[in-house]
Image 1 (tube, rainbow, N blue to C red):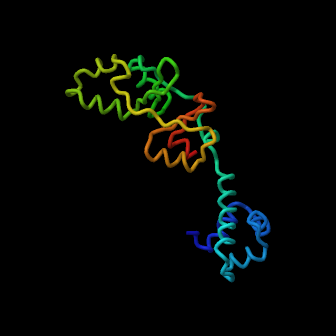
Image 2: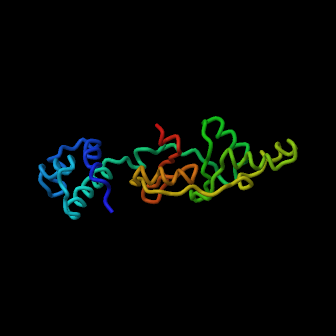
Image 3: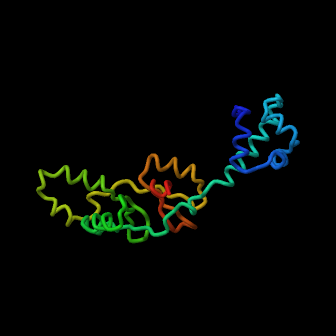
Length: 186
């Protein structure tokens, strides 16, 4: 099912396309696009689809990619690091989550303010907090962040961030950045 024809003008304008440019992309005439935008034409489905396909292709091309959004400085911890180090990094860097890497550089989990607080709340009224800080990160490790390619579109990144605290960006199998919800808001 195609979107409403009234969206053609709005989407074309958002892309800074002229009617003629959109017509060329869709294999139609400029006058057809003008009539379509004014609602003075009841186009065949196939022609309307070509116009919407052209708009979608241009929107996808204009959309930012993960490499445009990512922070290239990935602050992380190792599974053997102490919780106190993870908490110190979270405070010092002003972040709320860290990926956890194994000795080979693979992301095996994550540590977040929430995962540490949940463990602290599980302790009896302040007892053992100091002992918790001396334990390895493994005690509070959560799910690893999803890995995405550097060319992943912003819309997919945003979708992933509705379910995860962060995503890791990779290029040729090597992690080159991280994206959090705050990176999308910048």
